[in-house]
Image (tube, rainbow, N blue to C red; front, side):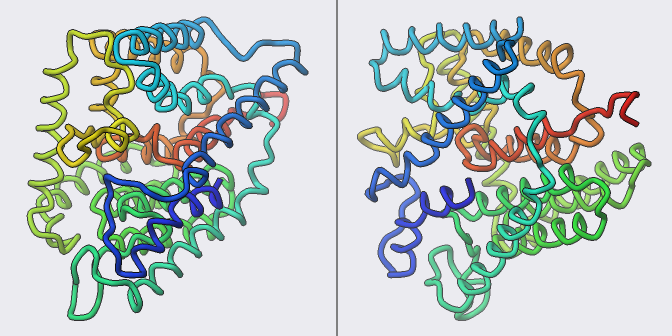
Length: 372
């Protein structure tokens, strides 16, 4: 998954180092790089179906079945109203979430501990690439000091995506290696360093919270109190911490405006599924002037429209009654990363972080009494 993500961004990063124009709303590179993640999605879907066939038990439950039926209904409506491509884009947007709904039984057989060294390699590689970019990357995002480029993006085009990747990686290490404190501290430390170099406020706050989760151990009430203090102290000072002028106003206020605009456009519609995605914007005739959803919440409300609340309720019921095998205390690092980055990123489209977090949450299994 990590190598596919690197190849996916290879063309844009090569333009960056050759000092050509870098655009976040256009892509003119080889299409094969972009469809690699779709190939992985299909392979994972096939593996889930194969695992279900071997067990003789389907991967669907009542609530997940209802959610997928709702999704297919909205995809069909969008195809009829907006064209086949728009509906297909909507299906591509929601497909990682559908995989999450289906992978519960399949994830039981995964040897997640074997993935830890590879995840750490991804973290170390991300930091190494950023250090290289400090010396050789053109100042695409400005300069923090004379001759020193700001916001090194690592393996990704957008610096915030790099921060998301390392935070999701650190969270998975915390879930996959629950008894290895030194490895978890190393992973969180690397995530914080990469987020600092990317100057991502979301990444910095998330990495700090992962560190607090480690420090507090079983004292969860202390963690939540420190979390409130962290937000109270960090939010007013994010302009200084990120070394970015008007960061809070542009990032926070701008996203709120986008959400309200999208809500006004689609709140009473059920036939706009797929229109509020990054892919739809990239494929539009004028991507620079499109209303771009820049959070999962905005994308969810825009695509589901009138049925957004119903879809959310079905999700809540699925989590409450069909994910009882998950130890939510152990899964909390992945939940934290998902929740915080959902405010600044369309998580469903953020590969491979979407799959990292899905696997991390499902891998946090409760230990049966007879196995203790």
